[in-house]
Structure formats: structure tokens, C-alpha cells
Length: 160
Image (cartoon, rainbow, N blue to C red; front, side, top):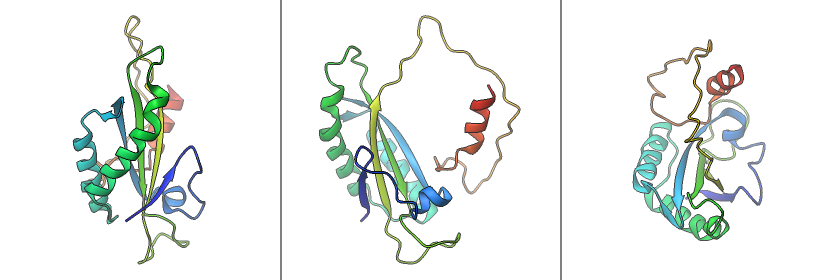
């Protein structure tokens, strides 16, 4: 069981391990109305990767949170100028914990749920791409996990 937080109500407390140490992971899901595109794949990956990080969460809990989020947010994105859907972001952290890198044994995970409009894609003009001098480190233990530590990507995006 996790603590459920809605991003439009409050953020993470400073004592949350996701905010303090990047101790967590995320999924970004394209939504059409109340339906998530490839939802089961996103949630399966989140459960699998949370297990790799030792963060307890169940598929049923995540599905229930997504259903609640779809009911809460989809109305705000229906009948807009662009009918391309909207984006649901799930951020799962180990939860609030003490100081230091070693997580406590009685930590309860936090799931932050956020929503936003689908970003516009410049189909007519295409996209620009470039190379960055910022190298991406390779850590086999974290490979494939959409972890909260995205500093390399942030630095590369700032460079280009």
C-alpha cells in the first residue's frame, strides 16, 4: 500500500526519499479520454522495476490509481482544440524516510499522480536533433529503469 498524492494538491515532502535521493521511478502514459495507451505495459514495467529497486507495489494498486486519475483529470482534456489526448505521469518513490542513503525498514511508498496536455509535435517542420558532449553513464543494475535520476539528460538538454 502506498500514500497517494495528487500533484495539483501538494508536492512531495522534503523528507521523501524520491525528492532527497532520487529513490524512485516514473512512467509517462498517453491517455485518450479515460483510456491509457498501452497501460498494462506501462504498469507491468513499473511493478517490475519497483521490485528491482525493492519498492513494494502491486499491479492492482497502480491500476486503481490510474482509474481514479482518469476520472479526475480526463474531463479537463476533453473537447479541447486538440483532441490528441493528454499525459498521465506516475512517480513512485520509496516514501518518507530518515537522513542517509540507507532506507528505513518501515518506509511506505508514495505515488505522485500528475496530468498535463499532450505536447504538440511539429509534424510539418519536423524536429531538430544534435549531439551532446555529456556522456551517459552505463550502470547494468539500473539499465531500463525509468529512475528519478535524470541529471545526465537534463545536462544534455541544457547543452543543446
